[in-house]
Amino acid sequence: MEFANQIILIAAALITFSIFAGVLSSRIGAPLLLVFLAFGMLAGEDGIGGIVFQDFRLAYLMGSVALALILFDGGLRTKREDFSLALVPAVLLATLGVAVTAAITGVAAHYMLGYNWLEALLLGAIVGPTDAAAVFLLLHLRGLRLRPRVGSTLEVESGLNDPMSIFLTLALVGLISKGWPKGGAGEVALGLAWDFIWQMGGGLIFGLVGGQIVLRAINRLKFSGGIYPILAGALALVVFAGAQKVEASGFLAVYLVGTTLGNNPHRAATEISRFSDGLAWLAQIVMFLMMGLLVTPSKLVPILLPSLAIAAALILVARPVAVWLSLAFLKFDRREISFISWVGLRGAVPIFLATIPILDHVRHAHTIFGVAYVVVLASLLVQGWTISLAAKITDVELPPRPSPRARVEFDLPAGKNRTVVAYTVDPMSIVARRRMARMPFPAGTEIISVMREGQALNAQPSDGLKAGDVVMLMSRTDDLPSLDRLFAARKARAQAKGPGTYDFTLDPDANAGEVADMYGFLVTPHERDHTLASLMHARLGREIERGSRISTGAVQLVALSVDDDGSPQKIGLDLDPPPPQSTRTLIRLRVNEALRSVRELFLADPRN
Image 1 (cartoon, rainbow, N blue to C red):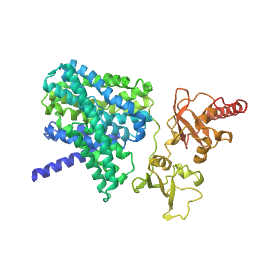
Image 2 (cartoon, rainbow, N blue to C red):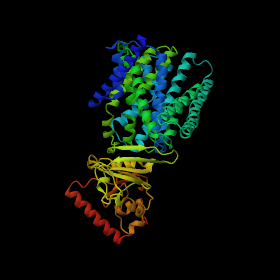
Image 3 (cartoon, helix red, strand yellow):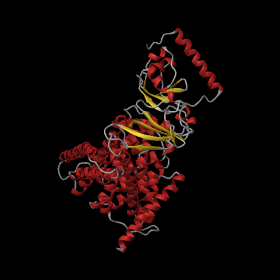
Image 4 (cartoon, helix red, strand yellow):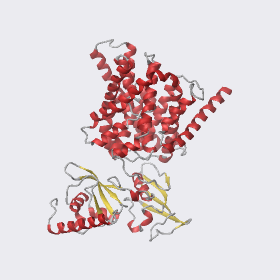
């Protein structure tokens, strides 16, 4: 009993101290996951804690469960729009990209460590995948807002590439253990191809079918609110374990269960999201601490230089080449490819994969584990610490969107895609500066009540909302991000400029008059029959580029993306655009407007 109490005390203390250390580290910009790994090393046998932990089977078991929970939570937060925007590039990066990364890193390992080709490729496969926990955390925790296609590609890739890396690792471990080539090369290749098809295809089937089963179970079974998050997590692990049992990819399956649940209306959405977020945090902390405890720093010294050389080859050669081969023909520009290449973050997954050769008694397995650990540390130190700088240099960072001051969400019966939310009006929000008649709420949003100074108003205030008002609304679930932006403080936004500054995304083919009535901007009677795209063409009088803007009264329309013909594919609406910064700029705008008016008076619009 005393031993059990001691274990509980040590585990709780490690988690608690890691959280506090993480909070302190954020002040100097250190990657949080690096802190967890370092803290595990400090608590280990070479550190001040002196804890000896070498149970690789337990580490593999706990790592599998932790990674499944992390992927489930990542799936919950991956929106359908992200998939539609980034599925093709993410799949290419998760398959071709991982294979190319493993091959090039394997070549470096062969010459740096003198291993045979199978052993060297095994090391390349282990360090090949980007880490879902590292990518999700470092992108969201830093508050980075990236170009939509870039951010979506990185997140979806990190959720999809683990199955490919696990397949390569298990396949290479099997070949090494069985002494390849035991049969002919063609027979081996055919067997590997079938294994790959079954793992990916089986994981896809388990994930899609299992996701629908989980969704229906949550919507049809009636429990108290606190049971639903536990049910969702337990069923997700059932799908994961079932897929693994038949040698399909449980990691792909559990990620797809999360995406199915996260993109469909269901009971207790808020409770499930919060519970899963907390559980994923716990899984990340435990996983990184445990992987830190497994390593003995003194044993890394003899392999430090070759490990750093392999890390350099991975970061500077293998990842960029893999990204370029995967994305060069998908209309990503050079800056976007450069940023995606740099954010090839490695985390606990390579260390977790490095336990597999140890469990199968592969030659050099402990050295491979040590090399993987050094590679992860180098990636978190170099790439994780510079991710914000890289986003600025490559110009893929968008101005941040402020978070709402307060939002309380209430669940409605499942299947209605409607929710009730309450906001506290921030004095710097858009809604605090507009009358009710010009309130740019998404279509279908209804105000249920307004509370001012503790009193419920009998009617909507004609003079608009004031700072401190509590507003309860009914809206579509999909419109919550738009409402968040409307009720958020805009102090930092007033200084933001650039093509990514916008509040809503609009259809270029939408009728300009109807959109103007909805959002309260100004168009002439002639322009009311235009589409938004033709309105921008008419106002600008030239080929539209990404980031081009036109002013329509107090708001601006922004070209977010443009096709090869110079026509906008996606248009943003900026409700609070920055004012001109100088008298010279103001004069230039007025002259341009005058010239545009003259051109419209004497010349017909060639596009109409």
